[in-house]
Amino acid sequence: MEPVTASTTATAKPTLRVAAFCGSLRKDSWHRGLIRAAEELCEESIPGLRIDHVDISGLPMANPDLETDGGEGFPPAVEALRDRVRAADCFLFASPEYNYSVTASLKNALDWASGGRRNCWADRAAAIVSAGGDFGGGRGSFHLRQIGVFLDLHFINKPELHIRAFADPPKFDDEGNLIDGETRERLKKVLLSLHAFALRLQQHKED
Image (cartoon, rainbow, N blue to C red; front, side, top):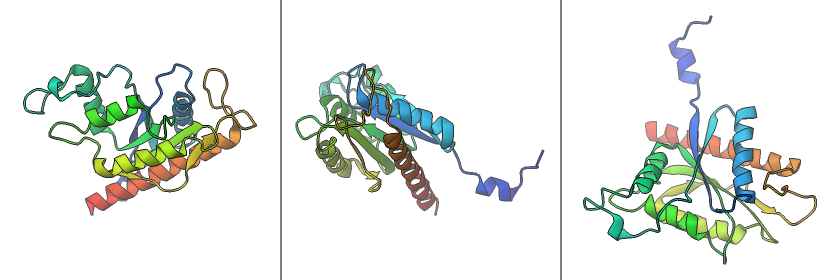
């Protein structure tokens, strides 16, 4: 067995924890399928990333009256959300476009994890993937980028993944699983870009 030396530990890259959020609550959602595909891709070929799907379906609607201890205490489901956001190294958002914006469920999670006295999202890398009609959810993704300015999120700019889900060839099966090979490769490039950007941000903080 090769001994561990200062040089080998210095060059080893850590496994980054990616907190993944699905903006759709539908069981067979394409966006839940994109997160599953991201999990598979990381297990198969991106050892430096680990996807942690954070279920936001059980969160109460954001309401400051539910906060306690002057903004330090939250309902149990919200405390669990904030803990997982704080523990993440970067974020993946997979969300449809609703009325040119993000979904209510995703906005609710964003609000809860930024409320109180601490914004749990701040100063970390993030990526957005979406699927929809002619614009592939792109307008909702753009609005999420605007929200991210206040949250101090750092979104990757390239590549983008806005999937025209109704165009041939089929992109998803009836259970929401990603079945198109080209789209899967595009998703992999997004994940690789997120990985590289998150590592650069971490290195900048250390410097």
